[in-house]
Structure formats: structure tokens, C-alpha cells
Amino acid sequence: MNTMLRRSVLGIAGLAFTGGVFAGPIAAHADARPVEGKPVAVAVQADKPDSTKLIPHGVQGAQSKIDLNDEQLANAKAIIAATKKAGLPERAAVISIATSLQESKLENLGHLGDRNDHDSLGLFQQRPSSGWGTPEQITDPEYSTLAFLKGLKQVDGWQDMPLTEAAQTVQVSAYPDAYAQWEQQAADIVAHNWNS
Image (cartoon, rainbow, N blue to C red; front, side, top):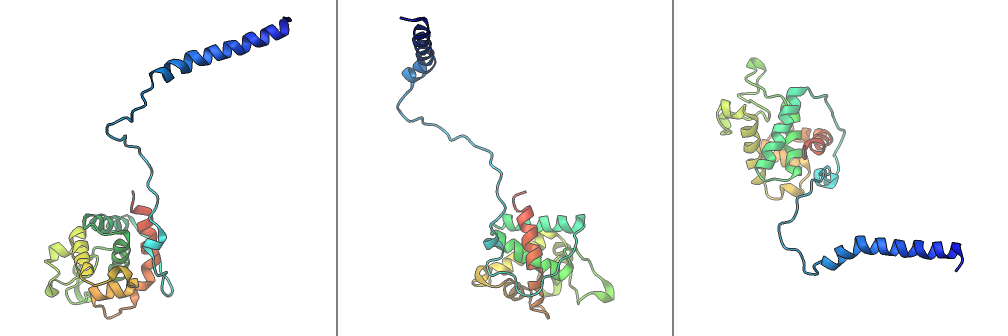
């Protein structure tokens, strides 16, 4: 056999042998039975909520937007946390944040003196005299959000309503269509913070 052919044959044989040594023992000891046990948790970065869940009807009318300071953003995050605590979906958080943007610009307002609308307080401008809670409760972001969401859950079909209709049914505002202008910003806030 010539030298070149002999080296090729030996090289191929060596590769076959090496492959068998490394693959053979693994294959020989492989168990064909399925492995039983607990699944391994894998960390996966959650995607942002689906925009069709956040704004199922599209926004209605011209949209407003304000720059949020740290306090306002913290209040928005408190609304999102309370929505999750209540076991409600992202859409409920969008409605809640849009409502608070209209009522207080996401500021946890105390008594405003002569500028106060009756005895309205907090993120949602809820009134103690209307049964929303004590002034201390209403100015607690979690409490006031859960109170708003309790009202929202009592609205039949709120999930399928335009935002302004759902918010107005709970709030009974003198300006029922005003909530719609905050839908896009509220959806953006929820999309950015729901999984953070």
C-alpha cells in the first residue's frame, strides 16, 4: 500500500476510534427510560404585555401626555402592584392609571383647601363622604387602587368596554370623556413596568 493511502486509512481509523471512545461509553450507558423528577427552572426575560391586551379598542380621541417625576412613577408602580395583588390583568392597570392621570396626574393629593373638589383626596380623588374610606385610607396608594378596582370589578363587562366608559362607571365624573386622553400614556407605563 502506498504511504499516502496508508496515512489516510490510519487517519480515518483513528477518527473512528476516537469518536467511538468518546461517544461509545456515553451511548452504552444511556438509559432509554424517561427521566423522572422536578423540572428545572429556567430564567426567561418576560416580554412586555401584548398591546392588544392593553388597548383592545385603540385609543379614543386626542391623547395627552405628561412627564412623570419620581413620585408620580412610584404611584404608577403602586397601582400596578395593587392590580396584581387583586389578581386582575394588565388592562385593569391601564384603566386605573389613566383614571389617576385624569384625577390627580398620579399625585397623591391631600386636602387642597378652597381648590378641593368637595372632600376628594388621593390618586383617584375619592371622597370619604361617598364611602370610599377614611382620609388616611384614601391617601394610601394601595388602598385607593384596590378600592377603585373593587368598583371596576362590579361593572359588568368592564374588560370589553372602552376605557373612558369603564372609568366613568366607577368614578361618576362630571367630565366622563376626559379619561380617554390618558389611555396611551397609561398603556405605555404598564407595558414598561408590568414585568419589572
